Amino acid sequence: MRKSIVLLLLAMAVSACGVRPSVVIQGGPAPSAPDVLNADTLFLVNDGKLAMVQRSATGLSGEVQALRQLTEGPTRLEREQGLTTELPSEVGPIELNPGQGTMRISLDVDVNTLSEMAVDQVVCTAGLVKEITVTLAGGGHSRLAEPCPFKG
Image (cartoon, rainbow, N blue to C red):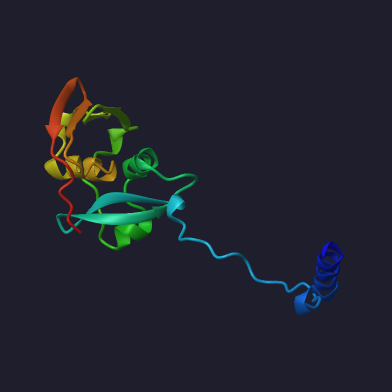
């Protein structure tokens, strides 16, 4: 009986179940997902309303990178498309300080001088669409802000 099993296994190994050797077939590149990690979403102004803008990131994207791009204002192409900003040019670097159910956003300008639209640009670019307490701070003042009002 044991000899029969060994012979059967040997016969199966030699026959390879009908699979014949073949040459290696070269394929194209592997499929990939959209380049989401290399895009930032920021909010500019178009005809007095918030406008969502996608920009390429120079590395990993995220809120900090998007806010840095926001402080640079619209690109030449964006300006040609009618996009503007209500943030002053001296807004400087923006710093995020998350807490438990809160977000403090620090700016290099007096936050009391910012228009509601400028505040919305910062809050929406920071991705703050959740119901959390958002505080803007800068110029020795602080003010509460509503979550992002952008609805698409």
